[in-house]
Length: 257
Image (cartoon, rainbow, N blue to C red):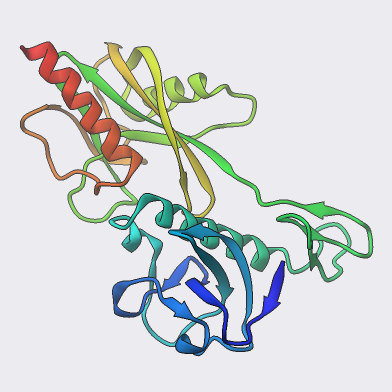
């Protein structure tokens, strides 16, 4: 339930606006609302971390606004809660008006939803399912540079699930489209909420089954097979991509022993 802060409320404060999170001194603010001058702001508790409330405040601060990616090095639960806040901020901001009749929306007091008091339509946050896969061929792993990434980082292949697809079909299609490679022995590993802006990553490992590597220039800057002990710059720790790569490195070592 949303409330107006009096100043004595305490906990962790996720103050966000348009995918940006307030991080004074490079950290999420912690303490009483008054300490951070948040009185009279609207807030909603979205969870708990270390026994303290985690609050969402939809507001743009004059400075120290940054990407939630900067919190990747923090505790995984805190990063997940901050990502939850970012996704909810985007949802509430994009659902101020009803998409059917155009009337003002109100927030539900019992669930994460927006309600139209005019036509009674109910809206929930939407999640876009994505797949990501690390592919091994003997002692090598297939990694790629995505056009959307800055710098020289290489990572696993990934993409969105399309309408009518299973997750397994999405993995095979994305790999073929982006690299011209066929895969086998697909194995599910884990999932990770990914608030950029509202995705859920389903992570897999797979083995090379055939095909000459040829990357799609409309999606990738480069793609190559890397020996496990001569890897390029990788995604940061805390990402599901890094976990997949590290898990695959273990398999590559075993294959090389």
